[in-house]
Amino acid sequence: MIFKSASSASIQAIEGERIGNVNTLNFIHENADMCWTLTLEHIGIVAFSVFLAALIAIPTGVAITRHDKIAKKIMNGANIFMTIPSIALFGLMLPVLSLIGHGLGKVPAVIALIVYSQLPIIRNTFVGIKNVPPELVDAGRGLGMNGWTRLREIEIPLAIPVIVAGLRTAAVMNIGIAAIAAYIGAGGLGVFIQQGIARAYEEMIMTGAIMVAVLAIFVDASMALLENILTPKGVKIGRTLGQ
Amino acid sequence: MSKACEKAYRLALLVVLLAAGVLLERAGLIEYLSDPFEIDYTLRLMGQHIRMVVVSMVMATALGLMLGIIFSRPKFKRYTGVIMYVVGLGQTIPSLAVIALAMSFLGIGFKAAIFALFIYSVLPIARNTLAGITAVPPWVIDAAKGMGMSASRILFQVEIPHSMSVILAGFRVSLVINIGTAALAFLIGAGGLGEHIFIGIDLMRYDKLLAGAIPTTLLALLADYLCELLGFLIIPKGLRLQQET
Image 1: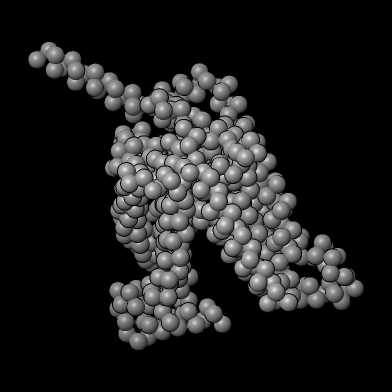
Image 2: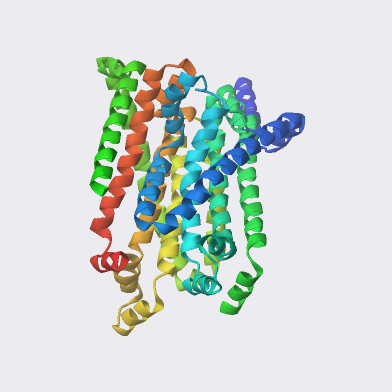
């Protein structure tokens, strides 16, 4: 009888620990340094890869606005890459990249993130520039602008909010994929989840999961703000008048 | 010119396929899969993977459609913005985090994985159903009302067929993400093709790794393609014509 009550009490204690989030906060407090380092590492991987991806994808997106047929092909190709599950892509790249000695670590992670970022950025650049009203482009032509100046002075400034929206999608998605990249040794906040699952350490898992989710939401919100800031004033006024 | 391009394209494709084949042989995949025990094991994992995806997708589709339809009714219309925002926020949460959280609440095993996949797949479907139905032009609904249709007939004969392509796009996104996330379900003890991938990475055995990664990829690509075919079946003909022109 006593035995039974004791064991049920201990089970209750374990359940209580599992549900209580106080322990997670404790874990974060005790490992603040580690949390900080991993967060910075995570942000670093994502920022670096989104930057490189933008360098490739924005010019591609601009270039294909002049050729509709190629545009469709390129976007279909990017869509196929997007369909490949991330952990499978890491798996597929591992044997190939280990030929040059980078099968594990940050290199495959960054490459995968760049590949996944292509579709949202290319598509948004393409759509943004295509949606610039043709009368504005004609007005530029009437002012004597050549193709390059029109692109720089009219089309890109008007498409910037849409392009930034593409970067935002890419960045948020990459935060999630970078978490999985912890399994191929890329570091970042996924390490908490990976180690936590391996050790059945609830607080560690919770810390990792919550921090990755919060980071994603934070980046989403701050990119939305950036989108708002970069929208040209005239476009904003036009929108309010349109309503 | 274009003919030469076509020829070069085909040649390049052939060379890539050949190179991939040689690489796979070098990695030992073909030998690995010729082993009767290993092929059985791989097929069993694939069965687990597909079962996980199908069970969670059936539940997610049902709930997603229901939520989307409920919140597009006039009664709840003023909550649409809030719901869209919450769903958008939910979608930014990474899949690994959802899987890990499901484990810390439900423990390890098939059920926890199904639950995580289900929760994660509901969002795109609900969102697209809601967006699709709200985007049905009001004059179409007015015409239906003028013909004397009841509310339920408007829903099933006008609104849903009209938003089918958007709903299907949500289903497709959801399915592809689901297949990728199901590969992570191995981490919480639900098996699936992720077992080959993760163990392959841990042991640095390329044959095992590829025996998991290639079927997962093919599964996702196949699902994507099947959804496209499904579009020809369930999107009304008139709308398809409208989209093409």
